[in-house]
Length: 469
Image (tube, rainbow, N blue to C red; front, side):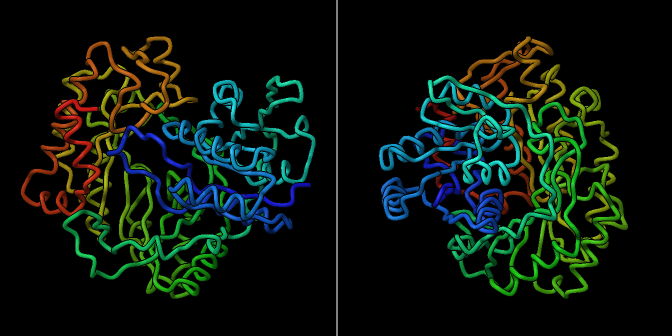
């Protein structure tokens, strides 16, 4: 039986190449959820939430854990390996477990590439981590790869039964210094933003896991079957956070909020029944073919301030080929509905889809400029492990080809990992620059651009423009 566990909120950063990408720098709900589940099962646990290696070493020595867990998205897996090296140098006998999207897609390959990890976890981590901490024989734990006593790597099959979301306690935010995570209500974070505006602590809330849609560029860590928590339990969790932190900003983190409209309406009602709509503001991400007016009106009444839509392309043919199965008209109609009820819209696009051409990208840029939205993001297609796009790129389908298997290049804003035969990487970056310039440098958009301008983004832009570094 493991006596103590430490979880890193995020890996220590050694060399992140995509500095322009929006990093997940807040407290991660997956880590807080695993901590709460371990504590519920009488396992002592703490969280390290720092970017400083010296501070991490000091905390490791003080706490002296038997087991350490590190998350790893694909672009940060090298940082996760660097963090594991720090752990092993500090506590040579500790067991280092890596989890998250990257090892979920390729758990055995992750151990083969990075000899510093002891165990790689695929999928949801609560039960798996408890099994490991409870000293269950590794060969009997589904959903992991591990190093055997002889040094060989063994990979077990996937988990045959997912955890009932009713059994997971509320994420334990007490293990964080949550005052670090206050955000302005208008989200202005740039170098010209006022710091005198009312700030709220940002809290992630999970209503559901899973996604039933078939977008070829997504990896579904929780699978396609969608599982919901009871709306009353979610509202109670929000209430507890309000009691602890006061007025908060809530982020519903499931990829597609509102798939089950009835459950969504029940959640909104539960929030309002507790009077929480007067104490919180919240936002969610959804799809244009999921929302309708009744749902949006109820969301607004319940405190929803913002909604994000993954639009991906303005070309109907591309939307069909990548499995999005929406249309430009559906997109326009959904955004107009949001504006009518008073919910601000943010959108995301991807440039460099399979079969993409320069003409289809120009069509996307023009379409983005037509949309009455507050914000937008233009990512470049990344062939993430476990996605259909990666399989296509490996097989050179749709004009795609892999440029690099160095995971540090798998950021959505640098787009270095893959390119199209018909659109070289340099031209794709130029089109991305054009998209941002034409969208934001227009009347009504410049103010927002300046408000979100940071020194890191300035430095990254200079490096790209002048090809430095």
